[in-house]
Image (cartoon, rainbow, N blue to C red; front, top):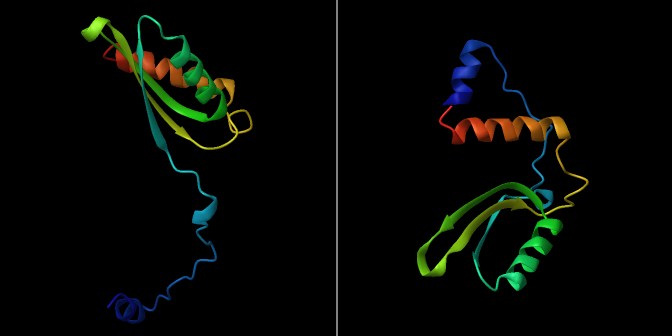
Length: 106
């Protein structure tokens, strides 16, 4: 039906030369951590190892006072070299400013 409408209008459909290479795409993933307030050294080291080894898109943390207190951490990340693919300093300053403005209701 679309081809018929294009023919009637005199337009020709354009063929795209771009190909989708799904095998090389990095998809966003989520990792969750809960870190207790006391005796958390092992989990902290695991978290730091994870952060050093992945390209982090966003990290959210919330303190929960239940069960003696713990930090709930959600990390959005993609696989890849964290240094080679890191955003530049200007972009990071913009993101920090935006996050502060949103968290303050602005």
